[in-house]
Length: 182
Length: 225
View 1 (tube, each protein chain N blue to C red):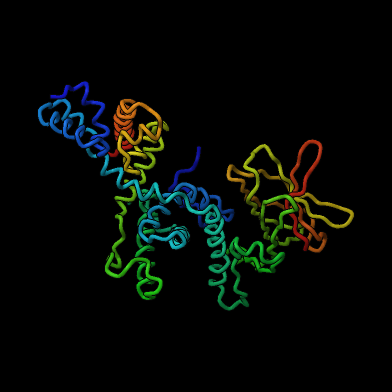
View 2: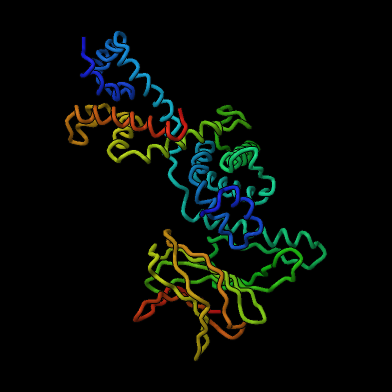
């Protein structure tokens, strides 16, 4: 049986092969990167932040308490602190400011941890839809196309696109409910 | 008034704001008077808010593949530092395991690999493995000397992501070869293995990674010491 995340965290300090850390990295780097990129707005800075999160997690692995929350939440909390630190450093060096002054308060991570974690669950839910369902949601919601424009682009009858969109949203709602998102 | 059968399939486009203005008006009018359709609409009406949260995450895409090794290197680099901090009086050359970016820079960089807390320092080498002509993999090895041979930590990336392929690491000297063991790449074409070889320091002058098959073997990576 694969070890749980909490077991991996317990192992990372003693594990000289780095495999426990690699497993955690592979599970969480994608969403933490999305979270960091959204907060910092720049890929290089977001990658540095991901590195910082896993390094801090390794240093402070002994402080992780499974009774107080999941490894996922713990990593997001580390990320949030690291973002605050990164913004503070950026505001000290105005030429490297990651956001225009006044755009966001230093110390305020946006989006919130809750929003980012929820957003990632929706991404995961979308991945569980059929490609056709995912495509109509992507075109209509993320690219802002109308049903008629999607029909033209995909060379489908507009009625097909409409019913497909309806079933796509119903499937998405069901998958999210299964994941405990309401 | 528009009938329910006609309105139901329109609800998806309606919720996502993707209907034509006249269609949208017709659906809105129907929902105001039909409680069944209004309930159906309510069941999906919250989705755009959730999708909006997903947008920035979905757009981000994955981080650069090289970040994984960089992160693991950075963490590996902290181990000897922390160990030496506990022994402040020892002569301690500052050692950082170089980032993967340094791979291509130098063929051989001498570093000192420090063992776990309280252990003797073990001299070691960091060796960058260069791709053989026509191959695209890169790698590095950290070699720690022991009385009985060499312990080799090996990182390789850029291999074909085919778990069917077996690679062998060989330590070469003119006239003889000592195997350090075999490994396979993961689904990302990467491998990290710890190997042992009977070859002792000074007894070989090259390390090769070869791709093994039934009839032949092909060189993939090499380093000359």
